Image (cartoon, rainbow, N blue to C red; front, side, top):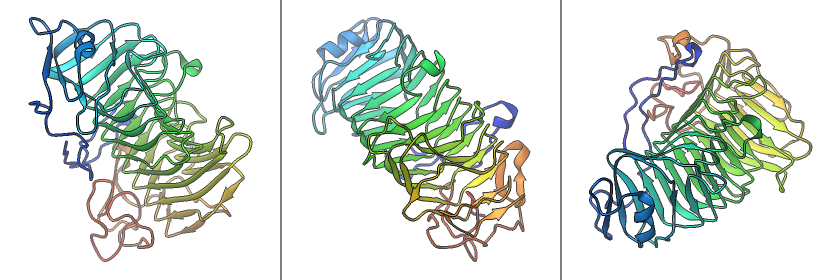
Length: 409
């Protein structure tokens, strides 16, 4: 799915979510056979179709089959029964509009993937689960595309001990309705998962964290081109995990006064007690209830090798960057960032080519953080560690030098 972003208007200050159209630098990981199917049978679901419910079709599906679900609402949940195989996904997809799955859900999820692998879910929505919207545990090669979670008492889309998981173009909201006693988060990738990608996804108005990568010592995760806003927070959270890239995201409007737009942490539940090798670049972090970016260690542990480069901070209530941790290791960098809230420094971080104060945004009150003509950050950044593109995937540099902040003029 290719999207072209023509401008970014963040309306979180006014309490309204503006979802930009976003470009992805990576092709969608799915075979070209949906629709129309080529790898297996088409099992149709809906009024007058082969099967009355998605569950009846799931019970009959084999590797390579495509379960075509007519737009509408289907009660009873969806429990996956069959593994696909390499190159032969079992695919569930909405036809003619969104197929909505309702039911009680529970600890196994309203969409219960379990440990079944080579599964794709396209154009479906899980709605109103009494537990998790989706739960996968011990699976691999999962694709959630144009998928929705519309309300759940516990976490929304939860993938534990999973490998090769793609979340693309999804919308997750209204999860963790039971509040801080809820299990897991709006979008959880954790507990030994690896090779993870979340892109082009909107995670908003949830009762706990937005996107959470946790307890993954080799996450190999890319969290990019997402809008994450209005969650209790943090909007994007990395806890006890390593090898994570967080880039080209808009993170605004966390609700709790201790929750940052992006937080890198080590909680006591982490067995490794480390968060290492996290790159945070080309993000806009604005109007969050705490800091834009925060570091936190619950009791003991180490945060190391953090590179925060070419981010734009504005209006965060507790400053651009907060340091609620005292154990840092490796090489940590703050470079080419705009700190509209005020200066940032820490002895464990090398810091250079950052700009403090109003740099000359086009219209920050309306959420437009592009650089105005002649603004100070233009061509004023460092080329060292600077990304080759900006938040809108425009190439860097565009002029005589690299610009400071998330946008290249």
